[in-house]
Length: 105
Ligand code: FES
Image 1 (cartoon, rainbow, N blue to C red):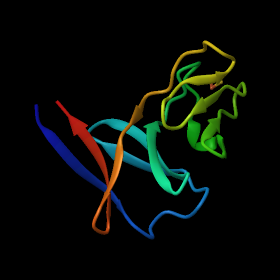
Image 2 (cartoon, rainbow, N blue to C red):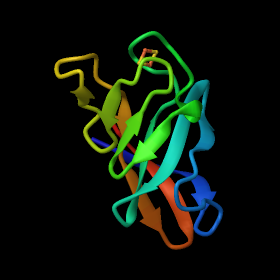
Image 3 (tube, rainbow, N blue to C red):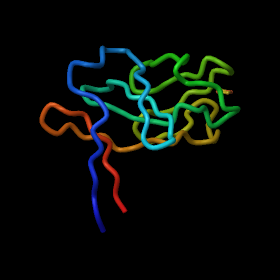
């Protein structure tokens, strides 16, 4: 099993509450500060594919602006409505001055 860390942003380049667009390959993601750390997740809402960059971060979850579905930013669980489609999330780790996506295979 291998681990890769992909730097996507430097510390200080993302403001509190900002949904920062990032890309890994052809995947469109968003990066956000949450609970003193960072979370990364798919930019496309798993409900009907709205752009979550227009969503609202509320504590440790994001609410889609389209139909109001809410997703936990660390687990991806759909909290509202319960049992809704999960959001794809990726592990984030700070290494030195860089915020990295951690990929394991
Ligand atoms: S498209 Fe996001 S809640 Fe419907």
